[in-house]
Length: 203
Image 1 (spheres, rainbow, N blue to C red):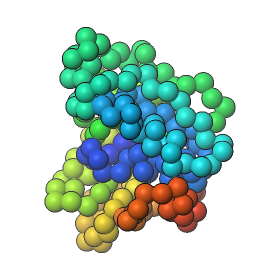
Image 2 (image 1 turned 30 degrees about the horizontal axis):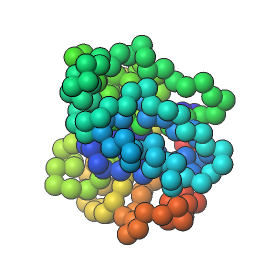
Image 3 (image 1 turned 180 degrees about the vertical axis):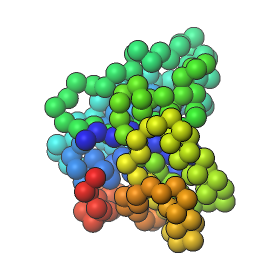
């Protein structure tokens, strides 16, 4: 089964989560919209750190120069991000699709990351991380998905472990806890492969 990987915020571990799932399950990878860091993009991260030979990496539908909200970056280049231009790449494999930012990050006036799940007909994996405010951001994200009747496969926690925070989130969202990504002191192919080798891949 293919999945849409999204997060409660930006910079909380979506790409790392995508890399680990791709490494563990041999799924393809696709990030439809990249805003900024074109020489060091999330697609490049997957190419650099995922070694599973089954993984195929598909090019972005939109590559925007500014490291800002996609709708603003696109407007700066006189581009309009259109839903009809974002279609799943042709592949015989399952695919991990990664959003650009959190669920309500806009692509255009009435087109948000959260709309990709319904548009691409994919269940969501929600990535959470521990920081001041993460409970609020996680519960709001889960509620937004549930109100739109978007299937959520479960939550992945990334980074520092705070059990009180995690148990509160799981109790109040009633979402499955798929796996945990520990804080990695060093980002290497070997460390990503080690995490991928021990996660529960029965999802």
